[in-house]
Length: 298
Image (cartoon, rainbow, N blue to C red; front, top):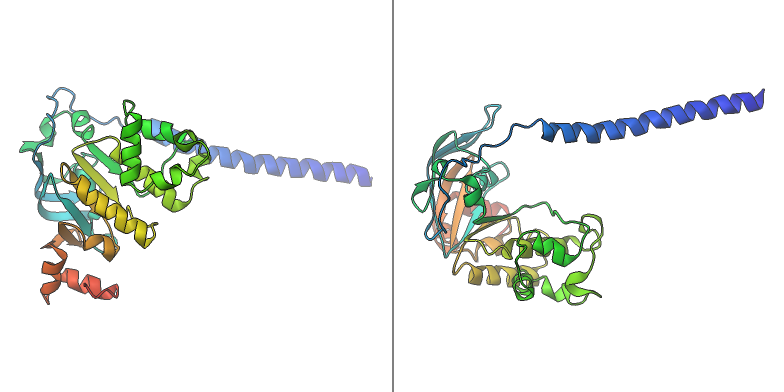
């Protein structure tokens, strides 16, 4: 009788575990079908390709709201020129990422226009625009492949020197050269054999190796120590000599080194200028933002 009860209990436990495992697989399948059911994006393939960007981007009268009606941007006018490092800053929910998503056409404004070299992007092939924009997301997306393969994912034609130069600019070469196989070192799952800061630098290097006219970095220094951050920002300023570099950032040490700062609040631009100019205004919302973070502004 005891053995029979034990068998019944074991079978019940197995059924319970099977149900739990099924739920885990169901959640994964649901996510897969969510993407399969998404409406395909219209890339405006019938329009002409955008020539190599020479001047920059202009946002005119931009308003943007999410499908649920929540406002993200209102009345944004901004010019972003090649050759400058621009920091977009502000509190959480200010609309910084929404603004950055407009440049490569990830978002389309509810009202207003996004102009690239004077051309409205609704009249150009989106693929030809995105080939000229490198966007490094805050999340670190790395494959369980070699470092070389991860870099070539952005530019299959990149040479050894191209990859090493990008890694040098991002401050990644110092730890890559210490690895047993260098660029041919195989990373763990999602790059978990690297530290958070190392993954961040490698993702930045992958953005740089594309060698596009526009580079957008979302919180690129969040996991970096001060010396590495200082070296990275210095390198990005040098890289901005031939491209537009847009940095979404919170750390004051990153912000104050930008050529221009765009301060956003509640979906609106509340100030544009250098760190010193914005701090000199006693009524500046940016100055208040700095003071709330405990920064002296010097």
